[in-house]
Length: 451
Ligand code: UDP
Image 1 (spheres, rainbow, N blue to C red):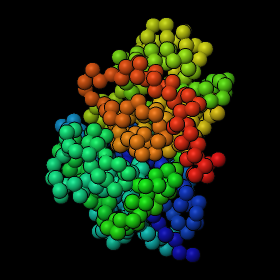
Image 2: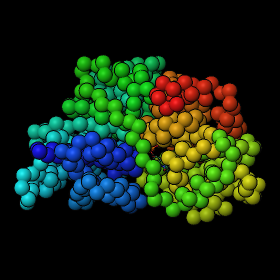
Image 3: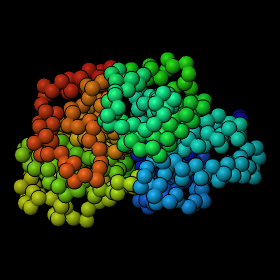
Image 4: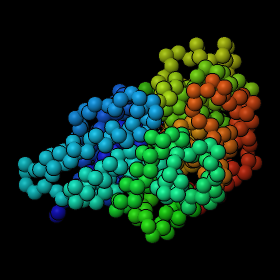
């Protein structure tokens, strides 16, 4: 029986690698003629991400992984101007290492016949791997860790570049993007496209996507019917494969038992869960506003509080050593019977728990899929990456989330604080049984075969 090898090149980012490795497991379950090797590129600045990456790639004995040698990170100024451009440039510097590893390790076999290389599957930040695939004469496939809607926006940049030829400004008119039913305002485009370096790197990635033999997207047709149809019906694009939702519950997590036990003591559908992704942390003034909103709401809550990471990095936000210093005086005592704060949360398990009623989220794509899949309505509070676009799609197109903000973004501006009144209003709204979002979610669950 002839064996075929697939090579996976993930970006060293938690929200990207988990779903990509889930895809690898799914493929291996489907066909035992297949073998998969993951080329591991180290994050240049984030040791926590590197620990997670190592544990994710070692989580299934069937998946082989090869650690590529460490490269010099790009200069600091590049990360300051655009962390996304910096990540793409850093990964580009791995092209020759990747080719060397493929030729000399993956395709060389000491014992019998080496498998045929069937293709290279790369994360969007690793689009420079298309060059390696071309050099080796093998097909390249994009793995897109975000949704079909935003993939359409991403691809659209290459067209916009021809028409406009410069980065976005917030004053630009709404864009007609084929994967969105309504025009997309500039204010919900990701921060990366508002500076020249970031914009150019985005255009470059989008161009590379068009050179592939297929685009594998972590979504499903019932989730984004309009977007998936638009991509599938565009004759100028490579074929689209929807493989989502790729969900990965966390097997090992220090505080998991305590959190799940606490949830189990709460009534069904009573808890508001607040969590803002791997990089979403807030400064003290914002934390105080959230605390005030939760206190005034009278609702039960589970709140994952994290220390923000630098604006110019893609590092994970870190945990606080103590919440006492960051929360308003007496908050813990006053909410003791109905609230719990934690650091990193076992999010998938929390969303799957019957006590969880709503999710105040940064709208990262994994979080969005996890919430929808478990039938938990969201409140949108995007912070970084493509989350504004996701929030816009969830609120305006899909009607599956309550809008707190669709255009909030992380900035240096200390005035950029969402006030307690607004937060409380959104929480009360999403908790109402009659909220149209809850009804739409029920209809959607039936369409998606969830109920
Ligand atoms: N996550 C988690 N606990 C946390 C924060 C995040 O388990 O406290 C998980 C979450 O379930 C999701 C991933 O980390 O699978 C975050 O991915 P997403 O695309 O939502 O956001 P990103 O971190 O990439 O911005």
